[in-house]
Length: 247
Image (cartoon, rainbow, N blue to C red):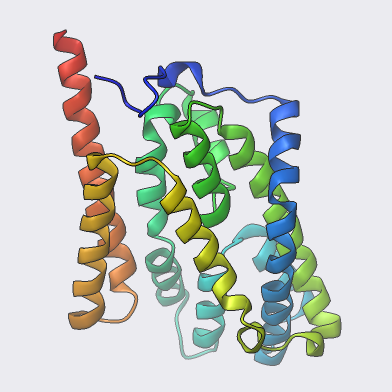
């Protein structure tokens, strides 16, 4: 049984070269300009929290996760342990478990070094676009790596601007910029692969997240939603592989 709607063998799609990376970089440049605004807001918030310019730039360079970086700023201080901050960052970024599960049909054909290397730059936008490319029978790792580099560089640049010229955009929400990524991801989902497997994965993830959001502590909805959706994706994939091996 095929793993994607176009009956394309996933083992034929994990291609990655300089041309694909550059193409992926250019594809994400337009969206990356919006990332600058949030980088500016983070740089300003980090400066107001008391982080030095070096610490702020290092965080954006090494962490590269806007939501968790803002959350860590709220906890920053001598009374909060490093373990607490690390747990919070993990909780917010737990959605990457679901991202990895959805890309597993193509990631499994890479060596462990390449597999974790390409996922190092995964974020919401380039993951969504790479998944859409794969499900359309096109190589997607160029978008994942090249697009990730674009978003990463613009995020770092935005942080730098925020540190020194932060008053330009102190609150991206007042310009409606907080809706850009949500609208973009919704468009990717609507235009992406449409089959019962993806419907079940997203339904389970969304349901688990909503239940956790209503009844459990803050940020646990991200972890439970990602774990629930990822578990369904991996279980369903294993079932398909078993049926393939029996044929």
